[in-house]
Image (cartoon, rainbow, N blue to C red):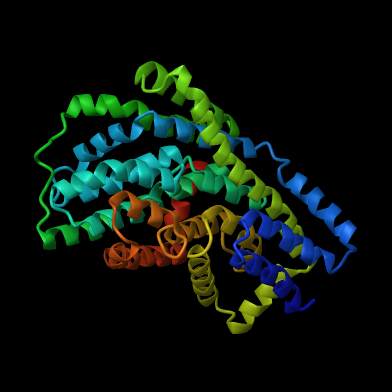
Length: 432
């Protein structure tokens, strides 16, 4: 096999993307074309359909659907306001505290909702007007919201890690969830550091005008935060699986929003379920067609070809990891997290495991890396949502985003070359 096989598959894929075809069709057609170079067309079509069906033959996939539904309920149930109040209670005394509050609220809401875009929209719609009222530059306010919105994707429960577990051949979801905590906190603290330095230079004051009452704020936010404790604690303790945890999350969220907070009515439920179903209908077809692409790559030995190409440049693991990071950063600029994980995990995971890298560590590396891509042009979803909510152009957001990208890249390098940042908690609590 030669690199021509890789060129056929990925050349067709990127050509179809450039022509504006939806990514799910681009993956499916590219897989069909690649397989058709080795089989008759009708046989290739049969293989693609079979692999698409087998790609969805996983009980764990239910966890993605349920976590998406729980996130939709949280989003529509007014959870963001309570988490923002909690964040203001925690960081309200710091200079530029509204920016710090934005970061903390995104970490909390993103972890609960499992969506960077939903977090960016829900938190940004509240925090951006507050920051403007206090004299913050709108571009800076939008940049803080955009850069911090993916932090919650690293803090479990995370659909991103569930997708990685599936495509990597069954990497422990409990280990991945635990491994995401410290990198997620690092991302948030790093962005708070940058926000604090900029706030001090610009004279943004602490949020003293609306100091939050301690006990009522804690009581209002505690049930929302408790969801993370129940889900992660149950999975780590072995009480229930990730799929069972996702169903429990839906039931808990229904009780929370309908009986305790009373922010959702029975009449509103069909629209929320439909919203979650539409989101799930985007994710699951991607997973389905990625099964066909993975089979095509295996047939043509494409992971081995790419591995040989990288190793021809250097056999130093440090250099290979740097190259993989740079490739993923470039991919993240043009592709969302889920399709990037589905396509490139089967390519890069065999390469890094040759050097003895733990699949859990690599999963965190990929997630952190691709989280940066959500915030970058030309197709960063959080970038467009955050800019739109703030009412500013992408160009105006770009300059204040630059120092945040520098810090995020430095943290990515730390996570890459210091595996214990990711593996400390799994090793401590799971004994792996």
